[in-house]
Image (cartoon, rainbow, N blue to C red; front, side, top):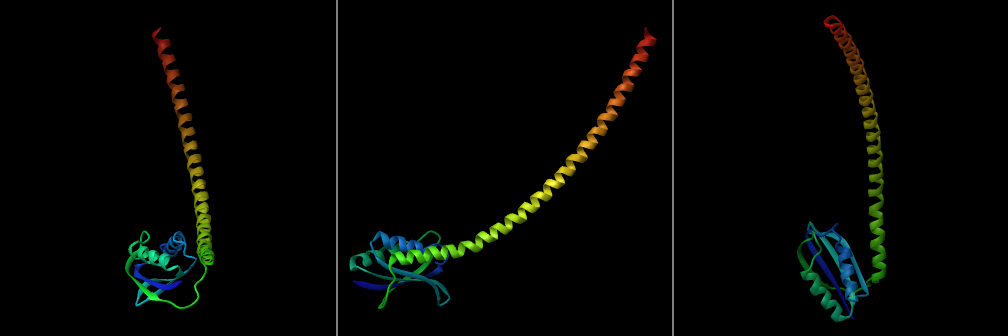
Length: 167
């Protein structure tokens, strides 16, 4: 049984889904104990992973992690250190990640809901304005119609008079 700690440092390794990526790839390799957390070391974003498992699985995992990164990651170095201590079961770590994601999602959902309320208010205001424009346009068109109707009636009357004089 091997225990190890990996330290991933870079310009961008936090808030890109690195820990779920690490967990998924550990589970693919049948690593039963893993825990990863975000930190800052020497001013750089850092993800620290603690693993415990069969030597061959851990070695395979380390090789993978040193040469494969999640999309959008900007990794500068991966350091391997020995680790003595308890490592969380992978299924418990999965639950922890899920709760962290829910915890991040709730404020985002509330923010979206508030913005949606603002947009609905703006939409109602726009509808009100458009109804006013429609009424104004309808009134103007009706006035033009009435004016044209009078002019047509006058033209018809004039034509009738001319016709009567010519005949």
